[in-house]
Length: 174
Image 1 (cartoon, rainbow, N blue to C red):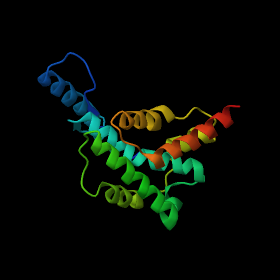
Image 2 (cartoon, helix red, strand yellow):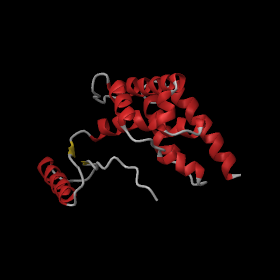
Image 3 (cartoon, helix red, strand yellow):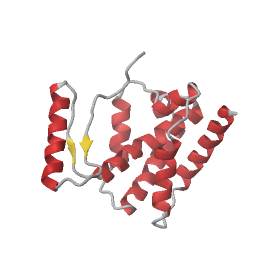
Image 4 (tube, helix red, strand yellow):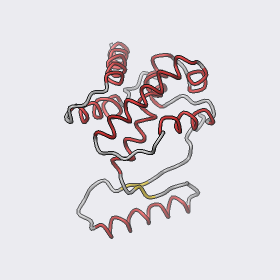
């Protein structure tokens, strides 16, 4: 087994009756424990924005790696697949901003540059499909699509990617 993680584990407060000060203290304590264990960690003050930031990378790379049976390096080196990844990222960024998430300027370009520097990588969804396990289609695709649809927004490329992945998952389960 080869661990392919980038080694960062950030924490954000999801829900519960704690006060703002209690939430901050809990997060700082958790981050402290992770750092003591040698894991890079920090507090996320805006969990919703952090989720959208993660989706900007996960939506394109997870799904496209499955559909094209490829890892990150070949996807990044071929002009058409790289353009597809960037178009998917930009679509997610527009939707995230309409949902109220603050994302950094030029975020897609930053993620593309980051991915260029990464070791070649097969996303988790690739492994799920390759091993016949259920993939995280609901959380990575269906939930964000539903959230932006409720705002009157659409992500047509993302929806098409989701539909293709649903077909492959159903076919694999048959």
